[in-house]
Amino acid sequence: MPREPRNESISVRGAMTRQLNVMHAVILRDIRSRYFNHGLGFILVPLFPVAHMGLLLAIYSVMDRQAVFGDDLILFFATGLIPVLTFNYISRFMSVSVLANKGMLAFPAVHLLDIVLARSALELTGIVISILLVFAILVTAGSNPVPRSSEDAALAILCVALLSIGVGIVISVISAIFPFASLAYALFTAVIYLSSGAPFYLQSFPEIVVYYCSFNPTFHAVEWVRSAYYLGYPTQYLDKTYLVGWAVGSLATGLLMERALRPQILNS
Image (cartoon, rainbow, N blue to C red; front, side, top):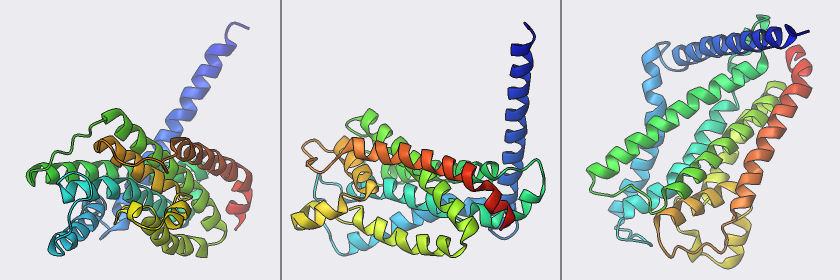
């Protein structure tokens, strides 16, 4: 009897080691296969969000747009773009993770969740590098990227990261059964992007528009990050509980779907 806990502990460690090894193999395969069939192609992953932000901010600068809060246009829009692009890029690339690596499921050691979590780890790494690059660019441009409330900014980014992983798992499971779902979701991310308020200041729109946009969880991520930077930022529509609920709910739903639909995915 006293040996059972030790045997169970060894079994758990063995399972974790197997999963980490499989995830490592999937990550290496993703890195090599996504761009130019070379590992260096991963360099492009963090550059896409940075290029996206840079292009939009360049357009605003040419248009001589003024910052709604503070006196730094670049910082104002960067605080909105970082959370929504984190969500869009992670969840969108996760949505095709199973489709891109479905052949690996033929190996008994590879499980469906290994593929999804490996892609989420890869995309999270890319986004973290992107955020660091944006911070470096902001400092170079003379901006101060340090938030007024570092705790709120960190919690908002953490919630949007969990949300993106949860939604990514849900869409990847659906896409594994219905491949067209990944394309439909990629198109829908444009709606998520626009209704988040990141590319413009939604509070200047009619109240009914802001109300309907507030059903978008990334809207609350944007508002949360901006309120962490700007004292007096209007937060009447910000609902942190709504964002946390979406993050936890989507993650739980995704894991349940992966478990329940695993046989159907393997046979599709």
